[in-house]
Image (cartoon, rainbow, N blue to C red; front, side, top):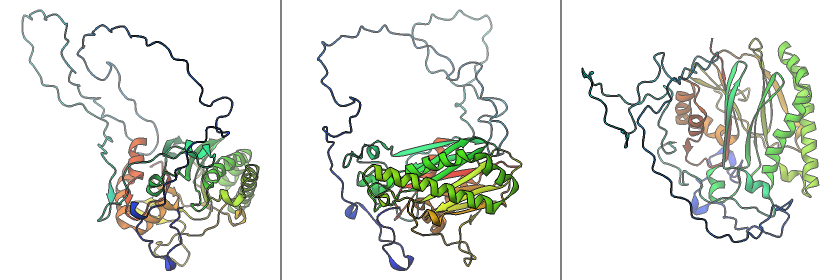
Amino acid sequence: MNAYDNQVPGGGRAPEPGPEHAPTRKGDPIDLAASVYEHGWGPAAVPAEAPVEAPAEAARPVVSGPVVPEGFLPRPIGPGPSAVREPWGADGPAVVPPVAEAVTAPAPAPAPTPAPVHEAGPAVRPSSFRETGPLTHVGRKPPTYPAEPTDIPAPSGGDLFGALLPDTVVDGGRFGPVTVRAASVRGDGHRYAAECRQDTALVVRTGELLLVAVADGVGSQSHSHHGSHGIVRLLTRQVAQKAETLLAFLRSGAELDFASLMSRLIAAAAGELAREAERAGLPPKSYSTTLRALLVPADPAVPFRGFVSVGDGGLLRLREGGWQNLEAAEDDEGGALISTRTDCLPEAYEHARARLITDTRPGDLLVLCTDGLALPLLKESELREWLGGRWGREVPGLAEFLWQAQVRVRSYDDDRSVVCLWEAAP
């Protein structure tokens, strides 16, 4: 959620932000006298040492041979979505040409009968490998911001936590019937203004439950990144304490019991978040953040998924090549609308909405995301087509997923967090 939200009445698109009218860069130098350097971790004088001349390294001969170690073959990934395939075919990798001839190798002895010479073909890469190249965009015009991070955030007002947050995080794995990919990326606007990433994405296992979540700090609040990262941490603690009960509700399909318990857990996590803000000498509102979370049982026989949300964002499903908005308003037959409520934690905990997703099918893809991706995904058909054509065919690797999740769309410069769950195919 960024500073451009809710500025245009009637739901129209905000003016396209760009470097010429972007948020002002913040030049807050690091105060070396502040309490940032705790436990004696501050800068200290280092005694000068005489330069040590490194001994000359003996030249090593370049040995020819295959790039792939002899006898190494990737094994099948195991049971799961049919789209997750073996990296190579059944015949294994092709022969890799030698890197170079040995410099000091003696001349080979003459053979009585020369063997036929075969030219080595190109190295065979995994079947899902693709050359990604620079970040792509959809739409007629590219965004005006640079495609890569520029300025680096510095501690602002003694806030070391914000400066330590990485620009981008990616995560993933397998759990029971699902394969997970997650990413959280700093938006173009925050990159240009040298501000930290206010979004976060979470993938964590607690007992026989998988908890995935995304949170979006409110851009108008200076410490909302504390709120987004704090709420997913505190929710994990609450869910871990009630994991067995939640799993029982998911097994039995007890939606009302699940919703009641999750509402209480959200309230408890929000209360802890508010107390953390107060201990830091800040009002709880300064930690304002949205939240979306899914609970998935490890048992493949349990088809139900638990969902809880506070504030804006999106939960979508890709099924047989078509996108479905699982949070569309009841009177929206086309499913094109998305919730744009401004309810935020820790204050609006009573507005938490929890329910079960009861119609999960093998081969489905659930996409849980903040509005940095939800808005362009629902409003731009080219983006739906671009992502659907990739995520609907196979489960990408982590690096490939990160590249895909960053596809750019003009006028959408907010932080972007997304968790994708691929249900095991039949």
